[in-house]
Length: 389
Image (cartoon, rainbow, N blue to C red; front, top):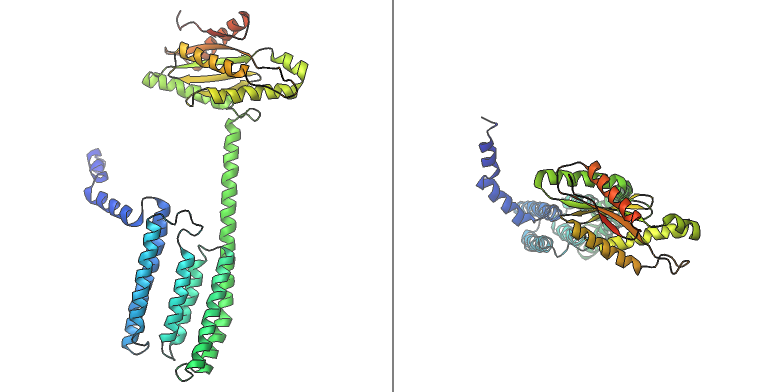
């Protein structure tokens, strides 16, 4: 049957498919960016190979001088081997032009200029088509200035070659014929260059818009889960974190602890020093918490001057040690230049989720422990009773 799981697994582990995948990774590169670059270079190499074969046929029928095909082949193919190896090895990854399109374009212009000198008088205009091809191919990778520069340089190079050849050998390169070709070149290349410039500009604008959109999306996502004042996670994010922690406990038995924290006498800080200092007190707490707590711990602003910490794989004792470290750090952390002696103190209620239950239950236990810490004199921790006791 087509839906047989064994058949699907066999197809997934087909040795032929795996061998082809390994071969493709070996040839084109291990990552997507490298594969795209090496594929572009191989495409150019194939185009050069076709041109070399066409030049060989052209030489056989007398359209091109006999020495030209060998020169084209012995310069083009080794050059593209070098281009391919440089890109495939990753040596160009940090360059502004990682695909080496500018060097490739320069090489292509030299090859076209050489081919122009070798083609017979009546068929030389065919080479100009390749010039437009190079310009069009580069518009998908070049900046607008680079596209314009390549087109202008190509036009000037061909114009110089036409003039020099007709001056050196006016019999084989009749000046009148070269002038006609130059007029055709001068009439068509500006249109090609302008099209390349506009397309490069449009592509660059789209890339900028996509980058700006990505940055804006990242900012929106950050604002959706972060508290603006402290930079900590917000209540919405922490609620999801708690739900995930409970699910992990139900599935894998991974217990966790929560610490519900309330800054002591925070209203007095606002009344005596102003709301600016109050905001700085919240920020001082957030900075100390992010510095002292483990990377695996999650701290969020729960509301007002309340904070909530989730400590995965932590016992009540380990959670209490973390709170003591945080309290010690805050005792040496200045809050505001306008209140040099002010320090942040807090009370916390610690509860461990080590028995089946929901988020509301563990938060209720932590809240009761916090109330007990406040009743006992503040600036201390209280452990919630175990579930069922």
